Length: 280
Ligand code: NAP
Image (cartoon, rainbow, N blue to C red):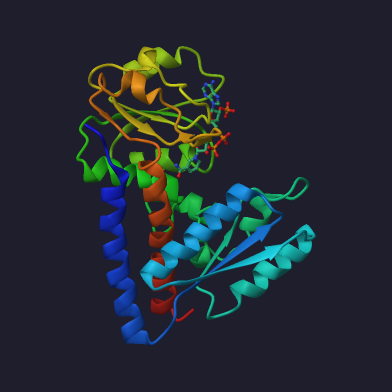
């Protein structure tokens, strides 16, 4: 079965919009998400613009502030000044930052309830306490797809150990009683480990990495990878090679990516609700 992310994303968009509409109605506010980009990475400009478009659909004002260059400390000071503004409900820093700057150090200064990306240590740590108010959107998106399509099988292997994908996803899965194995570039026998699991989540950033050797007829493949070639975007699975063999697979594009783009706004919404409830 093809696990179509667009259907999952559309359903979530409707739900988020209706909550945003009722908040706007009740509290007479304009929800506002502030994006910061340093440098001119073309992929991050595309991502920022797509957030602006998606925000518009949801009735959320999203603005991009661009710096050609900025000193790390000045960026941190700027983030702190945005934290203090009541009318700024979410803050995101587009990745990557230019060489010599620390993304982690910058992001970690965002107040936790304005951290729409879910990348602060506080929000990441909360996941291990089963508090999922704000979680990295890609990890949330994988869960959304598994839950929407009621994918069976509680053993999941993740090929990725980054703080964007593998680690937060492992926490969200554990919170739902999955048994999780994390693999990475130093793991031996990855193919065998993948075949022993019900679901394989692949996020290595290498086109056609996941071949028939990694899967069985019962496998569900969740392809997180995004690889740009001149003609198209592909994932990390050899999609054409395995799609008719495995039980379930997500396409790229139209799989995890589009749900991730929506789940950023679930984080934003949850943060906004926290701000309202706690008069922040
Ligand atoms: P990353 O930090 O570079 O992580 C890549 C992971 O893959 C690392 O854990 C690495 O292992 C592992 N890896 C690399 N080569 C491997 C190999 N040959 N065998 C086993 N493991 C291997 O990248 P990331 O930020 O997590 O992103 C990963 C991919 O997901 C990229 O393609 C990115 O574009 C995509 N992505 C997609 C979305 C979405 O919304 N769909 C969101 C975020 C990221 P080590 O730790 O040992 O180096």
